[in-house]
Amino acid sequence: MSLEMKPGMTTLELDLIGDGPERGRLEALLGLEGIADLVPLTGWIDHGVLQPRLRRADALAFPSIREFGGGAVLEAMALGVPPLVLDHGGPPELVPPGTGHVLPLVSRAQVIRDLQGLLRSLAADPDSLAGMGRAAQEHIRKYFTWEAKAAQILEIYRWVLGETTVKPDWGVPLGTKVEAVSPNITPRPMRPVLCGGARLF
Image 1 (cartoon, helix red, strand yellow):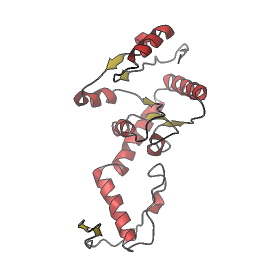
Image 2 (cartoon, rainbow, N blue to C red):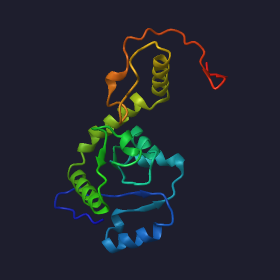
Image 3 (cartoon, rainbow, N blue to C red):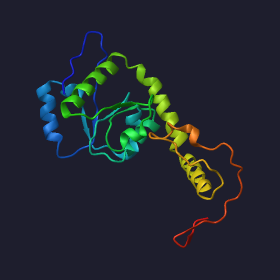
């Protein structure tokens, strides 16, 4: 994918982190496109120094069609780095509007065109990413911390036990249907719940 930088446009640098059998092909492609100096192939990085490295990024470009989870997307968002993902698999379910960009998956050519256009736009106006990064980080704090997950599970148990008629539904992506959480629940100690013969609490 080649990006033609326009006069006055901020230089775009892609930092590819990781290693694997595609490295040789990528090195050849970067040389052919004449952008090897803009795309450092860092290789494998110890996880202990990965977070500070990611935190320096303006965005995480993650146009994967084989990612059905999205741990890397959540990690980037937690660091305040807005993700750029495709509308396929798990990643788009993690990126509500305003926290990153979700590109449609139509064809390889369309993905390339859309990603080129988006990267050009972001290179011309990198300040637009700051607000998204803050929103992404706040989204993670609100819905993906252990405390938030515990509160969501508690809401589900209360619905199962008949303590509320409001079925928990936070929407997809998570948090896009915030009115689903019942505000009228009176907290009380939970009865032990049996699941497959095991006492949960």
